[in-house]
Image 1 (cartoon, one colour):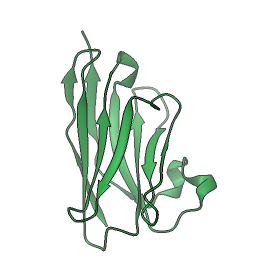
Image 2 (tube, one colour):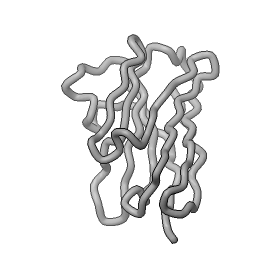
Image 3 (cartoon, helix red, strand yellow):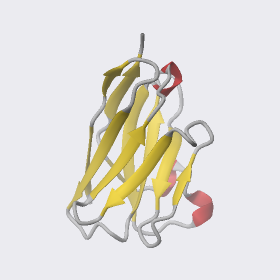
Length: 125
């Protein structure tokens, strides 16, 4: 499956952004889709994921309550709605997909086999 992330940009603290991850190449609905982010000099960090089979969602503690992941299987797209952005959210955001993944490894980058190219989110006043 090929993934294309988009929607990043430069915003001020407190603003909102919605990222999109468009998938192509294979049947989309069975895939678990996640968002990770990586800031300069830091390791890639799990943000959120949405299961393909159940639609269950999971979030990192740092974004819980501010970010919402959702999917539209008819459009082969996953969204990440980001509200109340702060400077700590500045990073390149990547979407990733995996066809089969066990729950205990949902948060690990190595569990995802397909990756998009990343979209830059900068939060600055």
